[in-house]
Image (tube, rainbow, N blue to C red; front, side, top):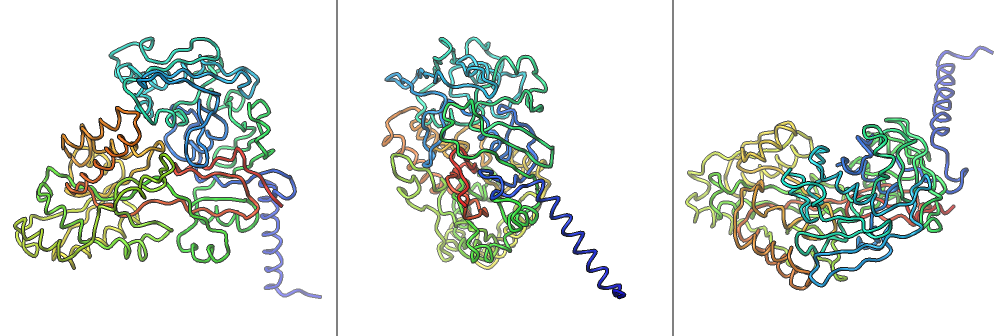
Length: 534
């Protein structure tokens, strides 16, 4: 029987699709067939897996699985013992003595020593390495001075007293220091291996030796990373997964297709247009993410050197409408500075405080008139600066229209490529600009010191604000430091330094059989205790 050409084409197409699907499935084996294997689609090829140098979420996410610091964050983002089984803190909060577990080992069986921590921290601080993460270690005594070549490495306040005892001296009491020690810049490094391979140790699987719950067993660059349980890990009984297979794709649609075609179990940031459908299917989850999208004023440049003008612009936008119609993605309208999700003493910092930003068209018009610009008359030309990106453009256009409708002001929009844009913001070459901030550690101070002198993008200088932040940075008394931070946050809005727009969230898609993982507000998923339940 002769088969019509159209049907032949259809048969060939089906065979081709089956062949492609088989190839993909071979590269990402089903969890049901291989037992405890988690398949997570990584959103980008890691630029580096050197904890001192990495700056992006994909790198940090991989490193969290293969390294462990003195502490590790629990499901409340609070520090709990990691490599250090316990520690002592001096009454003045300036000296910490960490006692390392005697059974803490590197994946190759070498013991994890206090010297590995001292070596790693001083390496991260070294001016020669020029790590962008060096500032995270500045709470360590003389850390900043060493980084700025004012002192030598042996004057930095970290010292191995013996193989299992690490002494750390701080510049001043730092209530969140234990949270910092869970951050990747504070991870230990196998000194012997790094010294033997200083330039390539983090690029070769044979020398990329970690001390965490998993080890990397395969890495096809821009293709896939493979992990296996690290049987040398001190808490190996808690690790239920035998393997992890992480295909890599920077395409949201591709990542989603892998999950929906049963070739992966989990991915982040599905396309916004798919959110409603995924929610109905029970696949979409929204995790808190310690970040905020906002606009920042240049408080030294007209007309925003007038606080009433800043207040008028802030009062004139509708966040609910903006998030519902433009931003979407499960984001939450922001009415303050510190993002929700920071639990301190059992209470969320955001829930324990007020919302400071308000929306009031009539008051905005009144303040603008009091500033000398009734209905916007006589106001100098205003330009809103943002970095190139479709979402940034859409948000800017929506707010531009709100200012036109509510204040009678025609604001000009200007976009720049990210590198130029960031330089413009740093140099103060703007009137009002887009910005965002993601906390590096789980404490409100990750937000509060952003606007402390010197060098903040808003060119904001308020000695009272500085004193409040310094007060919070210099005490271990939680009620005192929390009170100071709440007061400082209110001052930011009294002075109308920023316009908060929305709190970031982490949308992700996960199969219902994936259990036991923890998604931190820092944007990282911890799979130490994850398992597949089928």
